[in-house]
Amino acid sequence: MSTVIPDRQAVTDAPIEEILAMRWSPRSFDANAVVTDEQVTSLLEAARWAASASNAQARRFIVGKRGTETFDRIERHLMGFNRTWAPNASLLVLAIAVVAPDGEQPLGAHRWAEYDLGQSMANLASQAHALGLHAHPMGGIDVAGLQAEFDLPERFLPVTVTAVGTVASPDLLPEKYRERETAVRTRLPLDELVLVRD
Image (tube, rainbow, N blue to C red):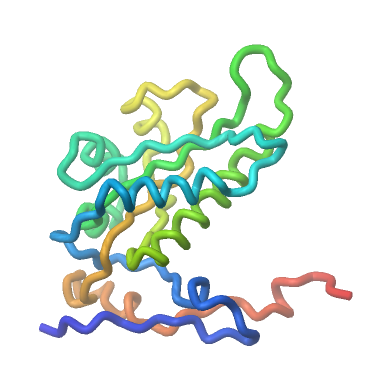
């Protein structure tokens, strides 16, 4: 069995920072690797300092290390193939958008809570890479189940769960998923993404 870890650096049309070009979302994680408390704090600090509309900081996180009850409580609400590979990650981070303020306050910046949460998780993913880790966000989650599991108020909306850990060989995945782990990374060209550019 090969233990080679794929090099999946993005082939970009213009230079970008290496940390961005090298970031990718593996599914094969080392089930024995451990993240330290210091690394977890560093990841969350990066998420904390992401941009925030009106500085409302309408985002919350639930974090579980593998082997803890919190990890298991998050993991049981993953869906589909995510339940096969994500349990090998060292950390699961439930990302929550606070979509409405507490009490009778006006909606205000909470309108952009999901956007701001996305920025937080992008910061977390980049910080993970800087620490020699990888992060894989998942949308395949049972939102209602997570809300009930953690007794979240209605205004706390689970949006994603991100697996964080040390990347492992693609050979650890079921055969039909190995090719996806090593395939050339692609994105739509800029002329399809950018509608107007003057």
